[in-house]
Amino acid sequence: MLLSELLNPQAIELRLAAGSKREALVELVDLLERAHGIKSQGELLDRVLRRESMMSTGIGNGVAIPHGKARAVDRMVASCAIARNGIDFEAVDGEPVNLLILLVSPENVAAPHVRVLANISRLLREESVRGQLRDAANPDEFMAMLRAAEARHLHV
Image (tube, rainbow, N blue to C red):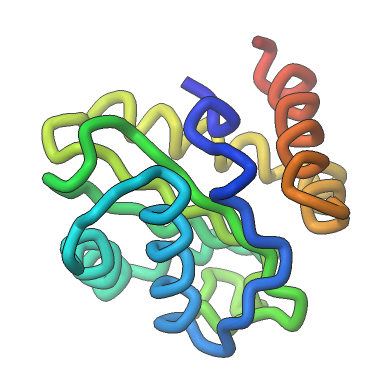
């Protein structure tokens, strides 16, 4: 499964307002819930914050992939955001994060969740892909660039 299959343009924010890690996670969860019609009554945010407290999901190169599992979702879903000014996410390289991808799966989904995380990580190792996504003018362009990058780098 590919990230582009878990997103829709409404789940993409190209100008994240957050100034902190917690604010970014709140905005990403809110974006995900609105875009995918999910009503979790705080469960998603709680799960994502709990996962993040165990270890930062800032993987380096300006990228963070916060994730979690929750009863409130019946399928894997995602949201993406660009933080133009960067956010201290306690990333492994110590650099600010400006490309954030939130992945949430049902509680009983294990292998597909890990495969999607691996695909996202593999894709975003490419500086050209990160740059194109950061430079997208609108959510539709972001989606088009993401699909093209997946086809190029993930051999789909």
